[in-house]
Image (cartoon, rainbow over all chains, first blue to last red; front, side, top):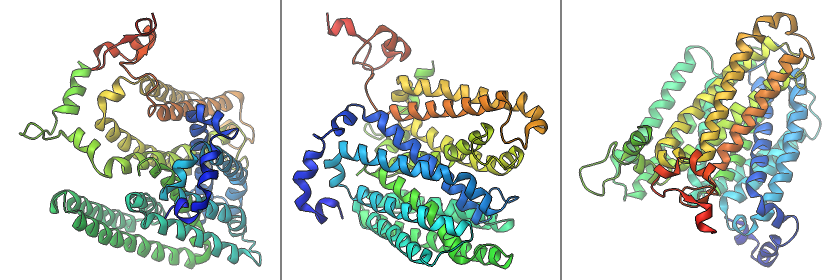
Length: 272
Length: 204
């Protein structure tokens, strides 16, 4: 699914965008603006990851969750504003390509979902001050993230980009689970990755794409189930110890992964 | 000698017996999705590494998380930074392996390595000199000037590493294009397959 398929009538407008200021100036210095966008994304990603990981019991555990959130909330805002502005500007300069890209649509929807989760949900959850509309906003943010994942999953050549989201999720769970469970979990992930590698490179011939695709889909499903299983078990233990609720933990995972989805979509614009 | 090793790495290592069998390096570069996944992972792990590092440096500068002592920040966040860095090094090495000669003759890659060394020196300076007095400034909202400078230097150098890394993708100074003598010299273009072309020769 691409914007050109959804809104074909916009084609003349999109084609004209690059001729409008500041698009042509940005196109001339595209690399600089691209770096600005990347630095904005990593500021946003790092700061929101710290707040979210603290909710999951990782990071500055000697201090309350609220203190970590308050300490990085300004960075989240700065990163979000800079990401949005730089993204819109480099998008203008590259509009025709993005208009035809499923990866861009996934990125764009993940970005909106991320903005909703960052501005309307993460704060009340981290400060433990839920408002009457927090769950509504959470539903919207999570729904948009799910839609962006669906677009990546059905986007043909961009679908491998989903592995970034899955591997990021598995890394988060790796730091969230503790003790011997971490070794068991990590070993399981490595076995699944090894099986994927064997299926892709040794078991099937390179021209047998249908079998390779099926093997990757099945093994990705097994990987996802493995990650979710450990996240649920650890989540219950956190609640038992008096930690944040299932809702708060879900938001924490989603808050990190929505930005990973946006970054993965952004990177795969260049590949497919 | 280094270039000969890189030629072997790119063209001979893992090459099959047939004439058109690819080497491992060529197979990696030609893979349908693996190279893209490596590059994407390299970039996304930057979010973990540089994003968290930025927060640590801003704390050293007395800008973010001012109420949290530096020792707690270091103890709890450094493992995340190191984890991100490990993924970046692994994926970065694999990316280099896919195109060693392109990177070898690329001015941005060479500058990136220089800034990586500078970043390492800044870390050494912090741990060998500033860290010894941490008890005196650990909980201060605004650490001493030397500590704040170290944080600023870290942000600056890592930013330059990121900029150089992104610029590698652009072929502005590719060997074989007309360049100034300085650029040809820095990239060792004379030893590249495309050779060194002087800008004066292209525009007499």
